[in-house]
Every structure is written in structure tokens, then in C-alpha cells.
Image (cartoon, rainbow, N blue to C red):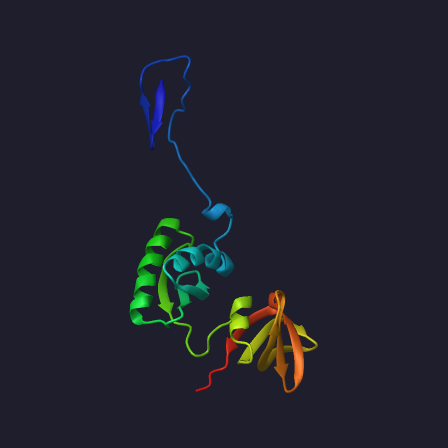
Length: 185
């Protein structure tokens, strides 16, 4: 019988009942069952649970893959973010990404607070900042416009209403490319 161990075939005698493969034995897996590299949304889905387990919210992610790869995480918590918080999340996420290996090539991992021009990505983000001023850029124009600056009026599960110069615009979440708070500074 021949048994495969790593790249070696070991002959353990002749046994007609057991058929083992001869030669190299390879095991391959595709990243997360996908045939392409992970994208921003996939990375958010992958990282939200371990970051939440540490007591933080993953606000948003910047992802750049290639020769100058970058993974930038924006985290938050009720008491605000300190340098120690960024360091703790960086160590945990770095180890997690080393094990999961979702990003091809090399990259720099950065962890940051959301900052004064905080990004809004989820329905909960928009709800938290009702009556605050925001800037929104759409993926596809709506009535000839792609950029809006106004106050958040209301939020439902599919859209946010933004009041711009007294006119209320209903902007679907699935058409929002970016949304940020306008700094009061």
C-alpha cells in the first residue's frame, strides 16, 4: 500500500484492498469560496464580528490591493477612540488576517478613529446623526444630481432623506457611494 504524506508517497507494502494515490498530494482552497480577491464589502463582513467582540464598531474600511496594498479600518466606541484602542484592534486584526489570508499580496494595516468628517455607511449610522449636516455622493445621478449637502431629515430601512436648501431628497442607500458628516470646526 502507498500512503501520501505531504509531497511524498510512502510504500507500506502491497495490499490489494487499499488503493492509495501515488505521487504528490496537494490541497488547495479558494479564498472564502470565491474565485476572486475579497472586496471592501466582503472585508467588512469578515472583520465586523471579531472587532465587535473586542467592544468596537467597525465604521468603515478603505481597501487597496496591489503593490502598495492598504487596509485602513475606522473604528469607534461610545467613549471615543484612543491610541491604545487603535493598537489593540491592530494587533488582533493583524493576527486574524494572517490566519484568514483574504487579501492577496502585501499590505499595510492602519487603524483609525472615524475623525470629525466621519463616514456614514449603515442605516444605524444615519439614524444616529439625524438633524446633522452631511455630504453625500451618489453612484448614479438622481434628477441630474450626484452630490448633496444638507441635513439628515429622516431614515428608513432603504433610504435617507436629506434636506438641501429647503428641498427634501430621498436618497436610496444602494445608490450612495459616500456619505460623511460635515465638520463643525
